Length: 115
Image 1 (cartoon, rainbow, N blue to C red):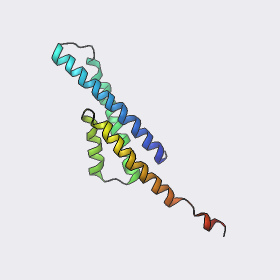
Image 2 (cartoon, rainbow, N blue to C red):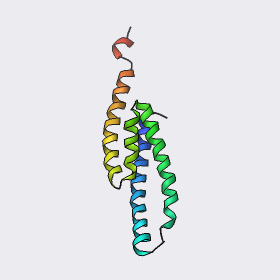
Image 3 (cartoon, rainbow, N blue to C red):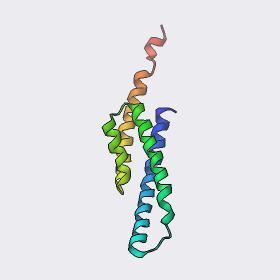
Image 4 (cartoon, rainbow, N blue to C red):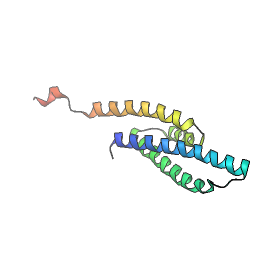
């Protein structure tokens, strides 16, 4: 999988987990506040999606050479409502710049191709 594809996968999973976390908060409010179990089933799928998100962060982080601390902080952003959206935006901007720099460094120099 290419680095841009890893970034896109991260973006999708960050959005899905962010929305899923908001749904989980709603589930908890309904359950504990109103004794309503209509969303009681959501906790397990949310946990599964969060695990995929962790994999997406690790895959992108290792590809771009991030430190373990940075990856853990990004992973933890997926457990705070609304924070995952802000972190996704910041990480995407930073990762896109890293990917572009990495691709320009590995691109062949057109001046050397004529020789």
